[in-house]
Image: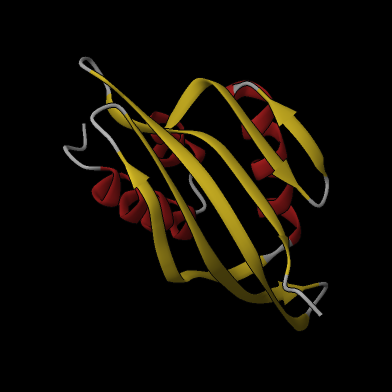
Length: 125
């Protein structure tokens, strides 16, 4: 359980680097909605399927969040925007990309802060 949204988002970034859904899942709210280039994924189970699919395509991935801006941090809800960068190997070739993201985190007394939504998209032209 994370005491602050900043701790939860840092834990999420670290868990993504593990490529282990079991480390990521506790940081995701059951009713979460994630919007990726692959589509919209509603609910923790659907998000897990989408993430495991990406994990099977990209090996040795490094994912990093930067330029983090907290738009709001309240007692039970927080939202942030950021840049993300990734690098990995796809079909034996080095690949990389970048974009911008936003997320909403929700806090409850039992689980602490968890991601309720994430939206990843391209950088502006």
